[in-house]
Amino acid sequence: MRRFGILSLLLVARVASAEAVDFRTVWSEVRGAASGLRAAESAKVAQEGESQIAGRHWLPRVYLGAKVYQTNDPGAAFFGLLSERAVTSADFDPARLNHPDAKTYTMGSVGVDLPLYEGGLRSANGDMQKELLVAADEHVRVTEIEHYAEAARIYGMCLAGRDRERRLLRVRDDLDELLKRYELGSKANPVGYSGLLGLKTLRNRVVGLLAETRAKTLALGRGLEAMGFRRAETWTPEKTNVSDFIATYLREADGADSARVREAQLKAGSMERVVQMEAARTLPRVGVFGEQSFAAGDRDRANGYTAGLYLQWNIFDPSDSGRSSTARSRAVSARYQVDAMAANERAEGQAMAAAAEALDENLKLMVSSEELLDEQAKVAATLFRNGSISALQMVEVASRRTDLIVDRSEAESRLVEVKAERVKRSSSLPSSVNGGVK
Image 1 (tube, rainbow, N blue to C red):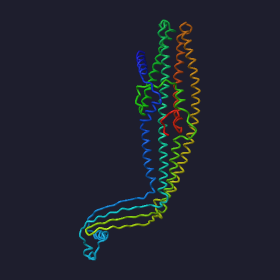
Image 2: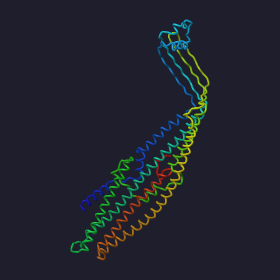
Image 3: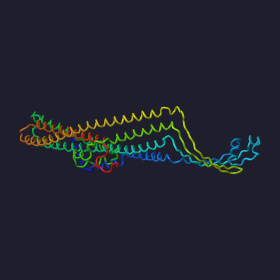
């Protein structure tokens, strides 16, 4: 018992010296440091780049080429002379044609390629990238909501643990007061001695529950630390009760589709663009092009140009066959999956709303019962001092108080978890929190 007492004193001293931090401060630190949020935001920036690139599909392709080479290959040497516009009649001598001297040539070109029609391939890709950018923005919102809900869940459970610890300390202090005044605990008085043992046993249980509660609270703090809050061992929740915290920071989710469903809808919509892109593979491509060339060698230097219109059309390509229908089937499947996801979320949301309502009503009854038991404990203590009731009866009253404290704490923790899950299924952060994604 001495070991439990020392441990309890250390825990109480640790709590007393800790800094009280409100949830807004906790969320602000988590929001700024969470790796998951940073990853989602970086992915959004990358998608912005992809969208900008795809949006420039209507611009022409401009290219530049240059090379310097030495050759005695008959064909390369002759066409090099042609590019220089320096062919003479002597160059048609068979011996010189077949066995030219090695010479150095310089070639350069600058050109423009402007596709006029590609079956809608690039425009569909541009639309898809825009939709994926909106989906990436929604993913940032989803990630933020999930981090917020998790931080709020941990903070709320820390509040429940702190209140549980405070109530258990009151029970322990009451037991200590009884043990100080107890005078019938000799073995010669079996009834009194049994009462003494009961009081000591219950006190050990309460001290053990205190140690367990503090250990769980520290473990929860480690969870916040992993999310980016760096004061896991030097803080305590602000002085507010769990019900007020839930009403402020874990409000019921609205009736709109959740951010997760919206993200899935956007991704499913982008797959419709894939259908268009795959269909474009079987359509013709039309464009204009122009190229300015430059050639220089041992004899001379010259310029030339080429300009025109081109048509490319894969009449049949086995690798393209069936792509459009396959993409359409995948798009339809994605739509059905989103519908199923939305239906499941609505069903789960209704179930959680019912569970939250039941827990809330149960908690109200527990609060009322705890107030009655506290009053009963005061009356029982007076009766015990007057000798009207036995120590075993006092143990029974204190034991019921302890059980109710544990049950209430577990119900509060469960309510926090249910409310946090509801927040995860919402379309945005609660309006009481600033700094969310706009």
